[in-house]
Length: 207
Image 1 (spheres, rainbow, N blue to C red):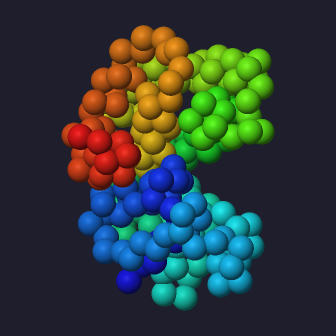
Image 2: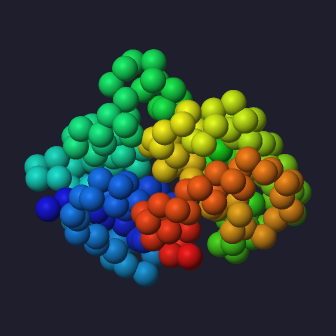
């Protein structure tokens, strides 16, 4: 059985947990990090020397980096709807996944760490304000994309891009910041909420 190692509150662990629900894939979840087992234990470091979650163990295969894990699981289980085989269609999905993992994450990090995690290293008011501006600007990019693409990020069908970006949108709505009214993002969020996997892992268990 697939093993998923990581704390269940981690945005990156939740990507993998949600995907497993979409795949109807049985798994064993082990709590590492946070209030779980230490990421500095030799057992964990032997799996991921970066001491970060998630890690998956699939038989003899060990993988880390959440977006890579999602690509692997979708490909391994033949879900071309989630990660197309066509080169251009696949690249469009991966483009938005990479954007989430890089640009979007860098935009929200200081605001989220300061306001939600209450990190002492992220309490500079100007840096928080700049992060909020950047975060809102990036979500506005998603708004414009949804105006073109329709129901989901790359078009009419749900893909891996929606798993990774859906979690970022959830974080945007859950963080106590001033947000612009973005009706397409709101409709997108509501659309994702009809999916059991998103309700279970994408919205922090909220209905």
